[in-house]
Structure formats: C-alpha cells, structure tokens
Amino acid sequence: MLVAARAVQGIGASMLSPVALAIVVAAMPDPRERARAIGVWASVFGLSMAAGPVTGGALIAAFGWRAVFWFNVPVVVLALVLVALFVPESRGERARRLDLPGQALLTVLLCLTVGLLIEGPRIGWSSPAALIGYALTAAAVAGFVLVERGRDEPLMDLGLFRRPPFVTAVAGATAVFVALNVTLLLSTLYLQHGRGWTPLASGAATLPMALGATLCAPWSGVLVGRIGPRRPLLLAGGFITAGGLCLVGLDGGTGVPLILLAFLLIGIGFGFANAPLTNTAVGGLPPSRAGVAGAITSTSRQVGVAVGIAVAGGLVAGADPAGLAAAARPGWCVVSACGLFLLVVARTAGTRR
Image 1 (cartoon, rainbow, N blue to C red):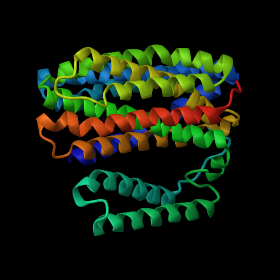
Image 2: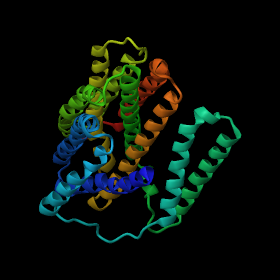
Image 3: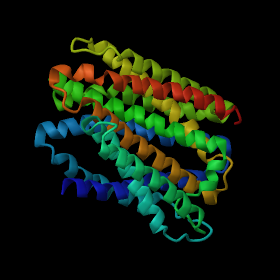
C-alpha cells in the first residue's frame, strides 16, 4: 500500500517541474530575463531542501512517520488555490496524443535499471539473474528507440538529442541529482544509525546544504544571463567535487564541522548547477517545444533521484551501524565523480549568453 501510494504521488510530482518550466519560458521570452527567472525557480529546490528534512524530522519526532504524508494534504490544497488564482493558462499550438507504448517501455527501462542497482550487490553483478536483467534492459532500450522513431507524436522527441548542448544538459542534470540524493540518503543513514542522532537533528544538519543552494541558485541565473553557462557550471562542478572529497575518509569520529562544511559545499554546487543546465536545455527552442525539453530534463532529474537512492542504498545494505561510515565511502567518491563530470559538461556548454 505504501509503495502504491508513493507511485500515485510520483505521477502527480512528475507533472510539476515541466509545467512550471513551460510557464517560466512562456512568461519570459527575453533570454537574459529567462535565465534569471530560471535561477529564481531553481532556488525553490534549495528552499525545499531546507524545509523538507527539518519539517519531516519535526513531524516524525512529534507525531510519527505517518504525519509526513498527512502534511501533504494542506500543502497541496494551498497550491491548488494559488494556481487557480495566479497561474495563467498556456498551451501548445496543438494537442498531443498519449504515447502509451513509449510510456510503458520507458517505465520498464527505468524499473529494470533501478532494480539492478539496488539488487546487484546482493545477487552479484555477474549472477544469472543480473545477466538476465542486463539483457532485458538492453531490449527495453532498443524497443523504446524503435517505437519512438516510428511514431508521429512520440513520448520523447529523440530529435532533441541531436543537439549537443541539450544532451550535455540532460546528462549533467542526471549527475547533479545523483550526487544530491546519494548525499541526502547516506548522510541521513550515517547520522541517525551510525551516530544515533534524532530525525530532527539529522534534518537540521542539512540546513547548510539548503542554504548554499537557495542563495546561489538566483546568483547562478544572473551569471548565466550575463556571461553564459560555462562559469556557473565550473563553479558547480568544483564545489560538488570538493564536498564529496571532504567525506571520502568518513568514519565514526569525523568532526561535525567537516560534515557541515561538506554539506555546504555540495549545496553551493547544487545551487550553481540548476540554472545553467535548465537554461541550456531549453535555450534556442521555440516556446512550443520548451515544455517537451523541460519534461525530458525533469525526467533526467528523476532518473538521477532514483539512481542516487539505488546506489546509496546498495552500498550500505546490510551494514551494521558501526560499519555504515566505511560502507558509505564509495558513495562520496560517486558524489565527487558527479562533480568532475559537471566540469566536463562545462567545457562543452560554451559561453553563449
């Protein structure tokens, strides 16, 4: 029941980011203003990072874990009222039909990928079950590409992937959210189970990360509008790499100031990354295709979320509280690798405003 309810929540959540991005693009036709608006829009991720863990920890401490789900009800009601009052209606030039075969194949592909990442450490990466999973994943990829190429109105416009800036933006967005979710899950497990912190204290420890993301996202949007995406992406990659490297030697006695510093650096990198990646993905596209590009970018973020959680969970599965820190060390290497990948993305992003 819990997993099914979360899937229903995911269906709703999947509609939010591309629609919000399409509204921003439609309301801000000037590229420089749009870059700044995307920076402000991206700062909402930082605000959610601040509010989510702390609020969740407080609710769990006061009322139990079920309160985390009940809390969604007034938030959603308020959002519906605000949308009805303030959000202007906008739509594409023509309606698009649902691509049910494409949706089914993409769902199968993502489930297989995440399932393999979660179960790989347990079943063995070269076990018969894993080999069957690899074959099914390859078949799902081939089937998805064939189906999408043969449809007049595909779920995913594969033609967008002929634009190198779009491809690098999508890959970069995936890497950023892999790093973010590896950080959030590993830090939560380490602080609560490895060091015995309460959920509220563990949530409060993420505040430096949220602060860095919230403050730097609007600044990043301004920089993208003035000088282009390369320098903000270089800053993002550098800060995320540095934050991950701070924790590669994590153990049970690592000082709290170093942990908080690492969270701050990762948050700053996250804040600098969103605006240039999103602006690069939708830049140069007509407004009618911005929603599609935004949806693909949003999907890449959700893939990063799923992969990040799967990687982090797979690393610490079965570890006892005393061994959590050591089990988590490869995860911090993954975070640093994602930051280094952003440096590569920055080199291909160019300096066009």
